[in-house]
Image 1 (cartoon, rainbow, N blue to C red):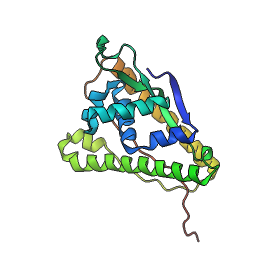
Image 2 (cartoon, helix red, strand yellow; image 1 turned 90 degrees about the horizontal axis):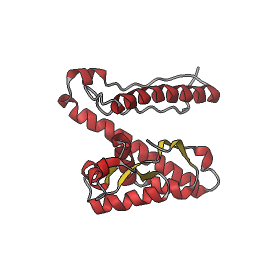
Image 3 (cartoon, rainbow, N blue to C red; image 1 turned 30 degrees about the vertical axis):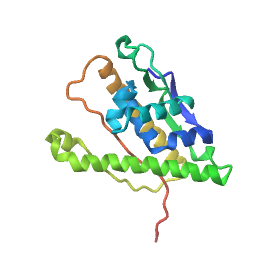
Image 4 (cartoon, rainbow, N blue to C red; image 1 turned 120 degrees about the horizontal axis):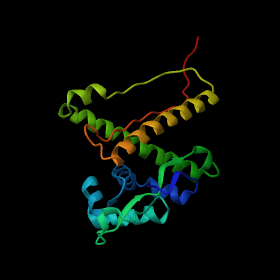
Length: 199
């Protein structure tokens, strides 16, 4: 179990550490697994164990992951890791003080978005391998709205609350050993303003 609810990244060094593409993939794989060793994660990301270990230590140095005491049934031959928080958040408002901060935050956000698109494209490439029930349940939607900035913020808060409820439901099932019919599921949603022609 992670030791804190949400880790709000506010410093540039931690943002840079998180922004490395392989570290993003490792963090995501570790989050899905709950806890894992470098060997487990190396298989997930198709990289050498030594390279994965190096990047895990970098994430740990910035407090993004931590050792998972008692994981792995007491096998002390390999170090077990887990996310240090239930979620990580970065906000544009925390990185506006210099052009470097703005550029790094934008680059990290782009890298994160690219990986989300890659995940969805991988599903599309392999979707015929999934049972019809999973293909029918999968969705991709775009909702265009006319909102104020406060309304957009409220919408984001409501979506986070909804996501937290479903995440807690899945975690409770996993903790109870109820794995029947369950798979890891990614839900990607964005909310942002854009300019359009209006009559």
